[in-house]
Image (cartoon, rainbow, N blue to C red; front, side):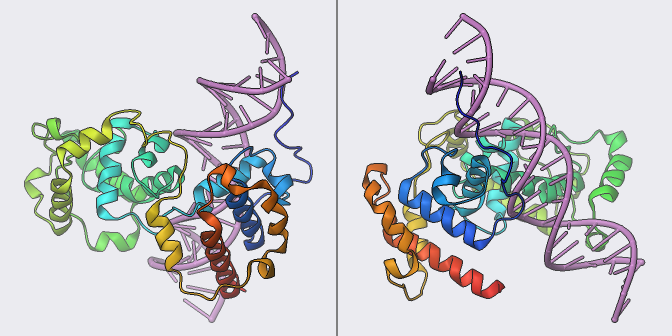
Length: 276
DNA sequence: AAAAATAGCAACCGCCATAGC
DNA sequence: TGCTATGGCGGTTGCTATTTT
């Protein structure tokens, strides 16, 4: 006999998460930690699959997540890492604190891919597209990926610097033309990435970076503490949480979460108010 | 102003490696 | 030791918002 099934598919809710579900999940995780995802839905009072809970937490609710678009520096780092690691999004995400594999994957597919193609770089191989093919290929790919609005301000292609060693010898067909604003800014960003940092980042399975258990970073803690709002009393907003106190969250190493959790829950309330 | 097309992103699906029974 | 659930990952889908026609 193996383990019990993850969840019975019957009665399991699917689709977008509601603010109430988020609230329940956050409270549960912050109180009890990430132990057994299969048990989470039941214990947290959610009609969701454990897998769905895990995804929602890691991709959206985790308090150390940065939200919003990737910065230019992050984007360049993603390109560099992708050149070396391929579509190993979780590994790439491991090198970008506060970013999830899903977020990076989406950003790659919606933004970076197009940008590289416009630059005449194959987003899969990170090699320059063949000169004889480039014109027609870029044209085709651009048509495929480019919105009409983008065609108005064509971005001059730049030499791709994902591989510091090879980039010196491999020139894109459009290198001569790499004096545009974007190319300059990207080059500047590339220059900022120190070689030693890169080699450090690319060391596979760097302890504490890759496959490390999630921890609440000091920055994230600070961010959540920065939220300026009036805190309701604990038992006022989450009476059911009191029942969880018996677990002793110190046992899970989450003793830093009390005030943070309240801030998160309040943020959700605010979000709720705004959307309703 | 309305319909159609496109972009962006959250969530799901299915596969795989690992671990529990 | 083999079977099966779990957790994690990458690929894909589908919904919503935005832009274009």
